[in-house]
Structure formats: structure tokens, C-alpha cells
Image (cartoon, rainbow, N blue to C red; front, side, top):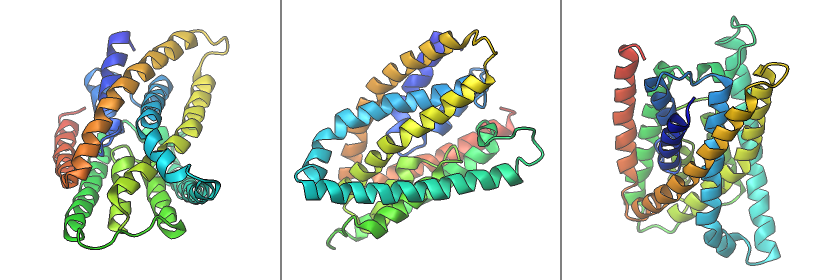
Length: 285
């Protein structure tokens, strides 16, 4: 893993993470094309550190919106905190349960099998991209027909459903987290800018435990003396900084397309990406 490759992956991650096209799928494909192993501990740590860079881009970009929506009063903050807790709890239950189920079924014959062992499988990424594309298309087309109707509120029920859908995304590279959660909000009738702000608020909550999980996995996989660990950590920090800048650019693009009624374009892209990943898998990547 060289600095140049890390910078390339960071740009791919930063641009794709904050668009509903599954940054993880794009990074995995880029890693394979560069001859890297996406399931190796250093690479999965790099991926979550790139997510950290884009997490800070999200905070910088959405802070004004969050302050206006959720921090105007103590009551507003408590209501926001409650729905975040509910959504995150649903994510944890669904995501952790699904990962354990996969590890005890698909990976039962793999020694020390972990969900990360599947991250390099393009034959799984392709259908996940396809499902995300269909969901985004459905939300975009439904939203166009609903324009005359009043938007639904983001209550506990809707927050729980969005959180559960976020949990479904965790084990599958290609099933875009932002695409799935924003689309779910739109299908539930939540105003699209509010669905977008809430989706990325959940991402900020989710990122630190995911980073901690991958850091622990890397430490366990490293030699006992820790040799070679420092260069990997340094490269991941550089990648996070590059992803931060690319993420800010992507967020501006996302907001314009979402507000301009072009959300379904991302669904078309995901379906095309699914077909392209299937071809790469057939070619032996």
C-alpha cells in the first residue's frame, strides 16, 4: 500500500461516500484493479479511516442545518437525541444480528471467519449495487408523484425504520448506506432535505464504533512487536485528510441533485455500476 494508491482510494472514497452510489463498492473495485486485497486488515482499516475523513466533511457541511433543526432549544435537542438513539439501536440490532448470521452460516467453515472476509467478493457487491439502485429509483420516482402532498414528520417510527435499513447495509459492500437511508426516508414521506440531514447524522454516530472495530482487528492481526503498524496508520491518516476534501465537493453535488429532483439518476448509475462489477467479476477480478 503506497501513498499514491492511498490518495487515489481517498479521492474515490471521498467523492463516492457522500453520494448514494456505495463508496465501499467503488473503493473495493479500485483496490482490486490496483492489485490490493480489500479484505486484509490494513485495507479495511484504511476504508474506515477514509469514512472518518468524510464523517468530518459531513459535520462541516451539515452543521448549520443540524443547528437550525435540532439545537434551537433543549426540547428540540432531546427529541433529536431520542430518535437518533432509536435509529442507532435498530441499526445495531439488525446489523450485528445479520453479520453474526452470515458468519455462522456462509463463513462457518472458514477458520476465524469474519464478515470482512466477504468484502472483496465482487459477486456479492454487484447484486447489492443493483438492490440499492432499485431502491433509489423507487424513492426518486415516488417523490416526484408526491410533490403536492405534505411531508411526513421524522418521528420515532420512521427513525426506527431508517435505522433498521441502515443495519441491512452494514454487511454488504455495494448496498449504499446513504442511498438506502435517504431513499427510505423519502418513501416514508419524510421531506427529502430532512431525510438527508438525518441520514448523515446517523453516519456520524455510526463511524466511531466502526473505526474502533477495524483498529482492533488490525492490532490483532499485526505481529506481536507491532512492526509495520505505524506506516499503515500514517497512510490511513493521510487518506482521511484527502477524503475530507473530496467529501465536501461530493456533498455540494448531492444536495443540488436531491433538491433538483434528480435523485433517481443515482439509481440508474447504481444499476449500471452493478452490471460493470458483474463484468469485472466474470473477467476474474
